Length: 253
Image 1: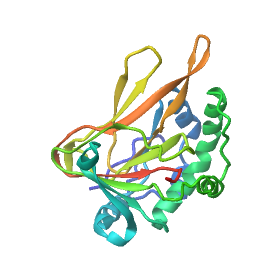
Image 2: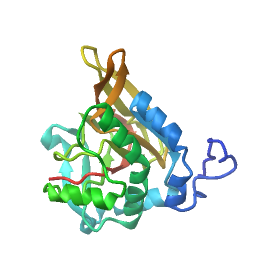
Image 3: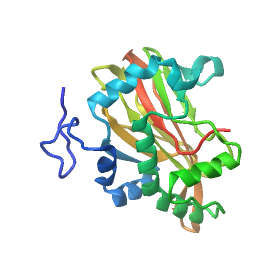
């Protein structure tokens, strides 16, 4: 089943006609995405993966040789469901997504660091940033596939993995809501100082990506910028099976 792209300039194209990963990312309106990240802590890209790519990632979930570890979420009180971290070398599609998206996010990452009065600045290329991670003992790859069945969910959390953290990450939905599963909404919460948490459900379709804050982001107040804590999770799956690709830029200790 093909879906029409709804973004301007995409009318008449299908999700299967997206061009290369590099072209898809280059074609995004990054100024608008940065603005959404500034305002809401997340931004929707529209379709970044086609049906064939989603199917291949789902089918490869059971290929043991691709992964360094498997996590059963119930054992750690993370929720219900499971996920697997890829091993190095990563699959080519994930290498390209990770390396191509990173430079588009670096200017915003550095501006956020400045606004929050953090010392760290991020190099333009992912290779250099990963070298910095590895120098700090963070050498294990963090891209992962998550699999949920009926009744499964993911508690609110942050993907930090060590002292060196890139402030944004991507989640790409590999299953089709309403067809492959029901429920299972992607949820973000925001905690401002001395205020109750605010939750937001982020609408995604198969192949769509959401870029979101890993931990903290700056928020402009009357006396300058202050830090807002972000967490993310997935609501309970009411029917079917849901798969997600997580693309995290920093490696794990």
